[in-house]
Every structure is written in structure tokens, then in C-alpha cells.
Image 1 (cartoon, rainbow, N blue to C red):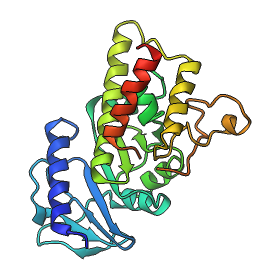
Image 2: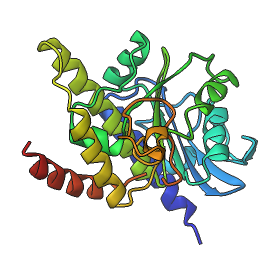
Image 3: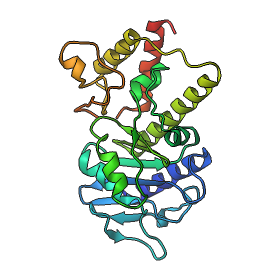
Image 4: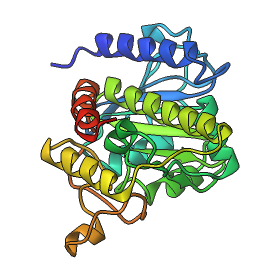
Length: 265
């Protein structure tokens, strides 16, 4: 039996984390957790994610209709986006939307995160595309995000922010952290004359290690058109997808250490 109160506490804890890390300002961002196919917990609209307590959290159905909400609280205005993710990705149990500074800057500049610059990013994320701009709280954003859901575990939202989703709330949050760290490293390396990218051979070795460990998630390493034809997997073709789903942070860390040792990095 799911302990909803404990999940609400975890949502509040993650809310504090994204607020304290500067990934959201004021009342920005939203978080949700899937309880079952018909019940979902989500953060309320118009409330700072850094100051929530369990009684703030709302419960909605798969259509975003309110099942339970304390007086003065309404579900996030972006609940449509969350519901689209759950509908099209049955393996996903949590969604985190935030406005991390560096990742959102890339989204505003129209630059996807596709350069292979470090083993962790290649293994955990593969690449992070940009979903076309949509008006907040409308179906425009869910429609824009939809085309990327079967291929990636995180997307940038044009002129808006970032979206990450995974098999648990903690893993979804870790995805968001990874996206922001990747963006920050890419930005800073550009200030130093541009990043030295990993070679195609090095990327393929990282992909092969990911496949060998059976890591979950939608990732270019898993089902790539090139790989199907016996060719090396691509890094950012945009046509890659996977039948599996999101990695555990500890596993990523352990694998990365082995990868870096193997590559002599």
C-alpha cells in the first residue's frame, strides 16, 4: 500500500532542493508522482516550491481533474504536460519541470544539448533536444513534448525551461540535475575556446557499456537506426528510441568510474 503522506513529504523535499539550487524562482516549476493509472500527486499552482508542506500537495486523475485538494490549493497549471508524459511513457512514475539557469539559457538560445563532452552525460542522458515553444497551461506544450518522449528522458522547452521524467521521483530529480550540470559544463567550456568532444569511437564504447549494464531509459544507445543496420550508433540523430527506461544515480556513478578508467580519462 502506497503511503501517500510519505510521498507528499518527498515531493516537498525535492521542491526545496530545486528551489535551493536556484532551479526555480518565486512560484516556478512543478512536480508530480504517479500513484497508479488513475491517481497522481502534484504540486499546487501559485506556490513557491521551496516552502511547501504535505498539505499543499493535490491529487488528480489521469485527465488532470481534481480528486483531492485542501482549501486554497489548485493543481499546477502545467498538469497537462505531466499527464501527457504519463500517458505516452507507462514506465515513468515521476515528472519534474524546472527552470535551471544554464539549461534554460540553452533553451532560450535554441541550442540543444547534444555535444558529447563527458562520459556521465553520454551515458545518463545521451542528448537533450529542444521541444518547440508552446504557451504555458495549454495543450501546445504537451503536443510539442510528445514527439520526443519515446526517444529521450529529458527535454528542454524552448524559451521556457527543462522537463525530466523517470521511474521514481528521486531519479527524475537526478535527471534534472544532470541536465543542468551538462549545460553548465558546456557553457563554461565554450568560454574557454570550445569543448573537446569525445570521438565517435569513444561515444560508441560508452553506449556499449550502457547497453551491457542494461540501464533503463529512452536513450540513443538502445534502438538506433544505424545500430539496426550494424553501423555505429549515432549520438544525436533524433531518431533513436528505446524499449527500456531511467537509470539509478548510484549505478551511473559506478559505471562512469569504470568507463573513465577504461578510457584513461
